[in-house]
Length: 123
Image (cartoon, rainbow, N blue to C red; front, side, top):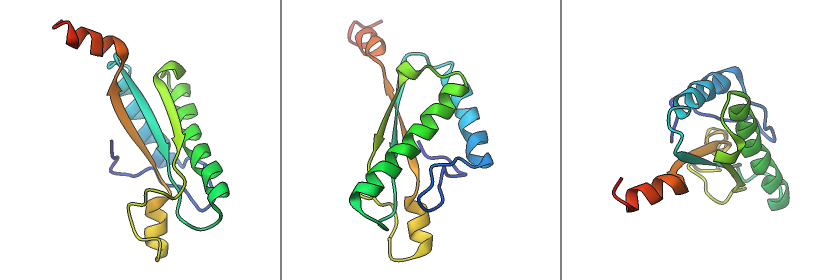
């Protein structure tokens, strides 16, 4: 899922800004009606710094989004987080603008086990 406002972070930061919080609140409200889904949150970084440091920062970003969604009423049981470090850039890391685009999270929505079983049974 891609958000128009983007959920982007400052350098070495996992703090959510007000725009991101507003976007995530709307997302959480929508997801409350989709109880048979789970989400995976992938945190990403630019390529500045060590791989180890970026692993930690990317995981903190994913965890920050998960915690905020949980505070908006989404069950922790429906959320998985993963830090991807700088391994999957969406833009060039050669410019500040590109690095800023790479400091992000991505949220994927998937059917949970119950929904998969119902689909297989033709329900």
